[in-house]
Image 1 (cartoon, rainbow, N blue to C red):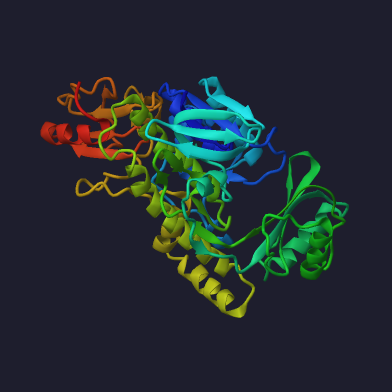
Image 2 (cartoon, one colour; image 1 turned 60 degrees about the vertical axis):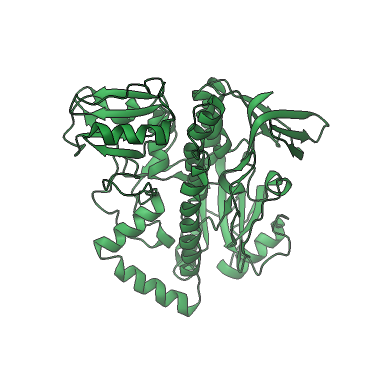
Length: 474
């Protein structure tokens, strides 16, 4: 019996598998598809995801395959400059195809020892007081102590676990395709620029290998969004919206997406947990879905490992939902708002113009950029220093930098006083005595996910917070 089954081998599942293996948890990943898809679902990583990769020593791998872009201009595609002085050492969005993100995270998880089984679809689920059994379509049963559903918005596991998925249905729909074109690229660019003056849900852009990614509003909402459009349907919509079909042919991916927003009633049912799109779906505007899922996994991984390892304090695993559910709620709200601002109708266009004017104020521009990139996320840990609950940006010390010190996946006490102790928790919390002009507080206790659990210089206060996040002293 494994410790954890992860259902779904996308970025959320592989991020989680790597986090668990980093802490010695026996993990098996069950992925329905026999091969990774060749098409590109997502095109970038926001600030907090870039920070997560840096904390695990993975960022250089990703930078080698991506391009850095300014943070500005992402909220509802309103073209504004990037705000200055964002609370991060990585003030950029990393443009990188999801196919590469998937591959790099899978390689990392397998390097750490995760067992990845492709071509394994889960069709049944049973759980008891000792574990969870996943039944595969070939008749095999796989058992583990816990199971995490990372199998997407139409999650089979979520349905089998009996977790409701309430929300708002789609009111508009968009067609998505990866195709080849016969039209000259110069003429495509001219048409796109003309159409996007009024239709912000339209776009054409190159992806690797001579393919082009195409987005065009659909004529209505399909009764079954899981059924992809035909190439002829895509051509018809291109002609209706842009006056030309650009000679689209040889599609390798045809899909449709709506603006539905749904959030799972709960993130846990016994020994089954949800992460990523299995827990929440929303319009892809702003490129937040993949990032939200990776950050779910980063929050859950160390907590589930603590539960498996037997040292988790009471309520630690349930704090996953307490912390991540409000983040998803907020993303769903402003994703819906962005979709409205992309409408070609006169009313939303007027609101869009007004918001564009308001974004000339630095405070407004910063507020929206921080929402979109995840910089604004602060978990509610109760009263304390203003840093408590926030992810700490990378800080340079005399003998290294913060994110390098977090790569073990353990907690970390950074002590500038030299007089604090984590005696009794040394097996779960590292200690670094060093100084930095950028820290701003005498000492901080960081959880394994980089969020500040405590800040100050009082040993009694520190000793009171250690059991909350790291269990009893040994």
